Length: 147
Image (tube, rainbow, N blue to C red; front, side):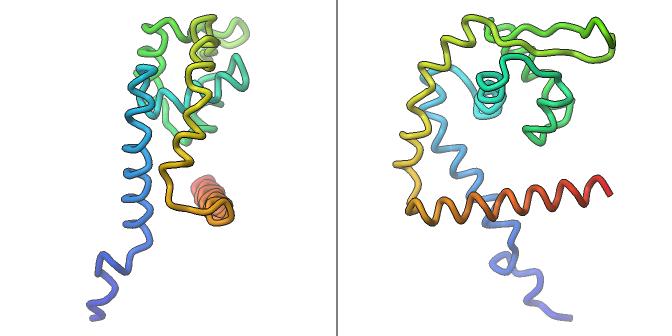
């Protein structure tokens, strides 16, 4: 048996996991200022862009299941940032709409990407390459999961 195959240092999954955790930890001080978790922040980013979106589509865009999204959206609604409404066309479907307070939060959050850019030890070119590779990995994994 090849003992090298199970060495942590030989696993692609480990640096992906550790780097993702590190990046999310670096977001924390900035997100604490606007009283959002990282997952709430990425949900709000989609809502700032689309204003209103179905829960199913939001989950697809964020790679999150309904078990994760439902409590997250309830908390955002409790903060007055979003409104959840059942679809008139299909009672099973729920639509999420950003509120005025949610819109105002966008201005407070607008500096976070620039602040985060300073926290990451990558050149613009390296960041672009990593971005491309990560989305390539995500899209490939998502297609395989649907097959």
